[in-house]
Structure formats: structure tokens, C-alpha cells
Image (cartoon, rainbow, N blue to C red; front, side, top):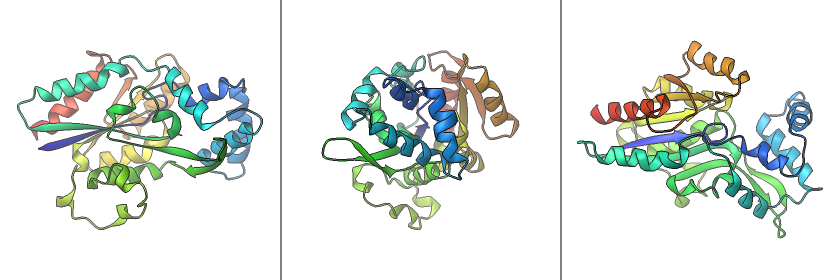
Length: 267
């Protein structure tokens, strides 16, 4: 059985930006939050992900931001076109191949895990890794528990390749560093497809490109500011393909994913 891993970023890849939308639901000025509040910490040499998580914790002290509110908010997310149907469509495609192939879906995100794990698509994923908070007995946010930023995300590419997925590996952060022969990898890098939209995805793009995997960048066709960033991924040879984030059957992105799957299956 040949396994193929289709790995996604989350925000602006599968859904509209969820952290901003969550904060907006508490009447927080998003432009001010990112451009002033968070950026002021970045200018003091903070990493962007702990910076936004720290400022969310500060905001939660005067707002009713709780674990439950994050979970409830997950039900209100707006998905990119075709996302809700994508996973069953791809499983159906793989089932019709003449090769013995299985596809597994994963999310590796710098976004908030409590939101991602409570979406209506969460059940499709064999594993989800994201930034997480610790909560007190009243479910109030108290501290960052897990931070996924830039190269942190590549750690989970290695976990997928070594088969270190699921709850049994949750409390074993060092096991990914154990030496494996490449022949022991459950899913070789060349059998992986990574789809993302932003600069936090660049290390994953680069790793898979180097290891003959497939890296696909997506962008929001309605956001003209995203065009330049997206084009740079192609210009700098970070990715194999670039498409608008439209996963509908027959779209360029859907067809690229299917062609990548078929190519892996055929080799």
C-alpha cells in the first residue's frame, strides 16, 4: 500500500483568516491589533506567533475569550470554495485508481488549534498540529501551550514521514529526533503534497521541493495585496504551482492536486 500525505495550512488556505474573525467577534479593531499592537512586539524582536498569542491573552482579560468560545466560533467559519466537498472527492478519485494507494490528510498551522479541531472538516484529518493555549479552571486563556512558527512546522512533516501521528505521540516531543533510515519512512517526502498561502509555509515549501515532494501555493483572488506575495513563491522557485484558493472540482487547483496524486501513484 502506497500512502500519500496531503498537508494543508489552515488560515487563508482552507478558510478565511480565523484568528482575525474571532477577534472581530469581540469587537476588536483588527487593523489596530495586527499593525500596531502585535507589530509593536515584533519590532522588539518578538516572534510573530507568540506575539499575537500574548496579545490575545491580554485582550482576553477584558473579554470573555474562553476555550468554549473558541470551539463555538469554529462552527461559524467561512470556507474557501469547494473545501467542504474536497476530501470526499479526492478519496473517491483515489479509490478508482488501478494502484493500491491510500491518501491521508493533515493540517499544520500557526493558527489556533482549539478552533481548527472543532471545525466541520476536522474529522477528515488524520492529525492536526497548531498553536494552542493553556486554560484555567474557568476556561480562560492563561498561557501559550504550543507555538508553531516557520521552521517549527517542518517538525511535523518529519513526524508524518515517520508515522508519528495521533494521540499516542502527543506527549513525546523528542521522539521525532530519533534516527530513522529513509527506507523506514512510512510516507516518503516525495509522496507528500503541501498546500499553503503565506510566509510561515516557506520552510515546508522548501523542504518538500528539495526532497522531490510537491508544494502548492494558494492565494485569495479577491485580495490584490496577496498577488505579489504569491507570485514571489513562483519567482523564487519555492513552490511547484500557484493557484487561487478554489478547490471546486474542475478548478485549476483541484486538477493540480489530482495530477500530483496521480503522478505519485504512478511512480
